[in-house]
Length: 520
Image 1 (tube, rainbow, N blue to C red):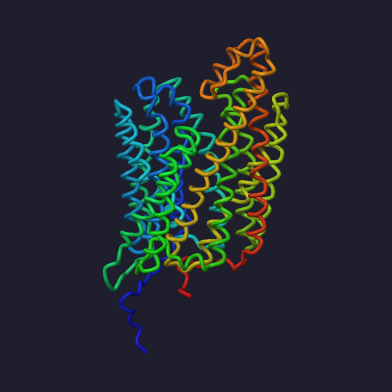
Image 2 (cartoon, helix red, strand yellow):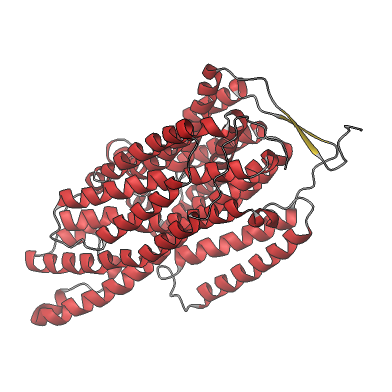
């Protein structure tokens, strides 16, 4: 029988067995890359007021965050697919180079337009760093050993959510906000050198030139852009019934339909529809979407809540999120080592989803007089749940598909989680603003003669402005804020319960003990 591969067959030749030292060096480079990408989603948040004041661009402030999130989200599936077709090492170096270049553009920016352009370029590289790092880990570390490494990856995501605002505030207050860009350059160059020197991946040999799904990439980019912009702008920049938002929704639906039609006929679809026939991929992707919505919905407004209720600045409120990081550290690392030791993993996202649901219920009980230690305890519970649930989903996906689809499947799972993050912020933000407006109106009505002193414009409710109010009016606004935000968390509880139920149907496939798995 001939062993010559078919014309369209892709052959992967496993690299030599890597030493623990080399694996450690590769993993360190990947961790730096992932940390850079994750940090840049949050690091400019606390610096934005200073940036827009210096660059005179308050009208473009929203785009500083949106440009990065949008660019990184739409390129995730592209990097995942291209990595499967052509190999990941060179793409990883390219993504790092793009990210460093975007950081240089942002560091030199003398206008908001240049700053936003730099953020978009960063996102084009950052999306690749996130996906390719996780896929490269699957190339060099067997699934059975990967659990303990995935735990540290989970820590990177948790660390970035806390360290990003802290570093952004520190750079802005002590040095310069531009350091948030310049710090990426030496770290990125170091990661590039480490990748070139240490990373050795399976050789991918194609019998013919790979067919790139250009139409699929374009339609997916349009659909993702429409959805992210709808989530970012709806209820903030534009009313939900405005022509802009309605138009974005229509474009999103049409582009998503076109994407499905294109993928059905594509020879190498960017997100193969066949992946959704894989039970584990579908269930874990839906679980990741739900966790993304709940996680980012839960913590998105928590720093502001802490600032207003406890009358602290942004830096202190960032430190108050450390208990969440501590909880995440315990379960992400501990759970990862348990997976490696026992080979059992199905229980983790189920329990994690239930713990997140419990944390959301606890958040819904918070009021303006809730003791701070109790709030910090609630944040610890949330961290414990996120550490259990989040990163093991990627391991389940990677262990459930052929190795030739690891990048595509990893990208698909992360793509929908990022969509969930955007939706979570939008859902909680929309519900919160609506409730806050009602609460302020009620407060104004009950204030009687002082009604005119109650600010009804939610955009004026900055922590500094609230803290400057007279004591009685200050307490009234704080109560309205707490009463508006806390019950919103209850809306997310059913979502996490559904996620836990769905994850019960995941098939616990034995973790692979080799890096390049056979097809089938």
